[in-house]
Amino acid sequence: MHKISKIAVLTSGGDAPGMNPCIRAVVRTALYNGLEVVGVRQGYKGLIDNDMYDMQSRSVSNILNLGGTILKTARCLPFKEDEGMALAYKNLKEHGVDAMVVIGGDGTFTGALRFSRKYPDIAVIGVPGTIDNDLCGSTYTLGFDTATNTVIEAIDKIRDTADAHDRLFFIEVMGRDSGAIALRAGISCGAEAILLPEKQTALEDLIKNLKDGKSNKKSSSIVIVAEGDKNGGVYDVAKAVQKEISDYDIKVTILGHLQRGGSPSSFDRILGSRLGFAAVNALIAGETQKMVGLQANHILLTSLEEALNQHEFKLEADLLQMVDVLSI
Ligand code: ADP
Image 1 (cartoon, protein in one colour):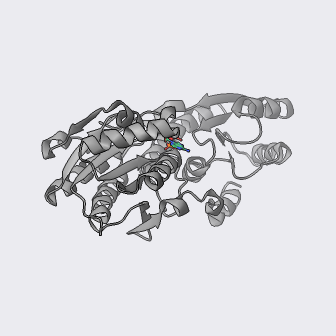
Image 2: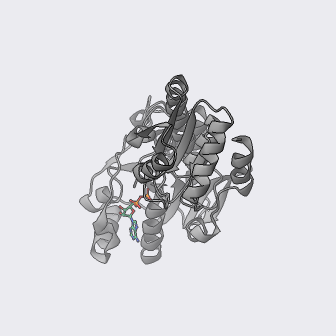
Image 3: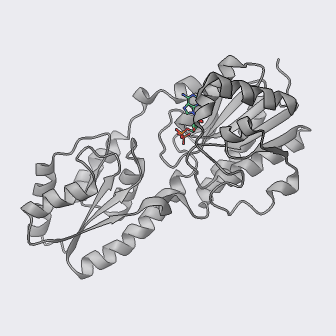
């Protein structure tokens, strides 16, 4: 069995609330087990730039409540090239690192898997850290709960003003390939319609639905549009609907980057702590090329390859069906 002594931890790709509780858990679980830890700044960029520092228990004091990531994150194209990976490997070896915990989304895992296949003497465990909730092998990813709660809070406020003025609001939420935030937020806020990347919604159906709502005495309507919806974006959808429903006062709001920030929810603090703890224990047990994830309230391992299998990933059919029923 591959016995480890020094773990590098990094956050990569899009930031997600809950990354800090996870970093804290990785550092303290490693130290508790007599291992050394180095923090890598700015994800794979820090590996290539040799931007790493030794972490102690106090390096992660008072960060449970912080959004973002104390290690910073970045997107790093050179890591996709052989030379970039070779430099990252050389720097890790110079620091005496023999294991890594990478916290990020599907891009981060793709990089981790390629790197680990090239350099198998450095064990790698992934932690699903993305607000998109789009990885197989974890019912929830780190940051998704906080981001969804942020969206809900914003939409509740919009609903107040929409109702006061009898308005129809189109609200764009994050999710280029994943409608997970849109779906959960839509159910939580009683959206009249939710447009998702995973499911084509015909504009005629949307218009009929909104007209029915108006004749059914709805005083306001909220339509949530995920970034990746295939109808051309929130402004195009709003314009097309306005043409057909001229008596509705239509407004558009794009929630944007506020969805990424904020103090992690209780759920994300606990999930981050559990996943960080489990990631280090998996490395100690000799595991590599795996992801730690939450399944039926247990932390289980899935191969990185399987976690990346997007064809297997689907939004819950019962939730999709329920949306239409509960919004009449
Ligand atoms: P996320 O992890 O949130 O999905 P990205 O897709 O931006 O974010 O990926 C984060 C980083 O992972 C990229 O900037 C790059 O350094 C690395 N990465 C992504 N795809 C690959 C790949 N095919 N090979 C190597 N590294 C990759």
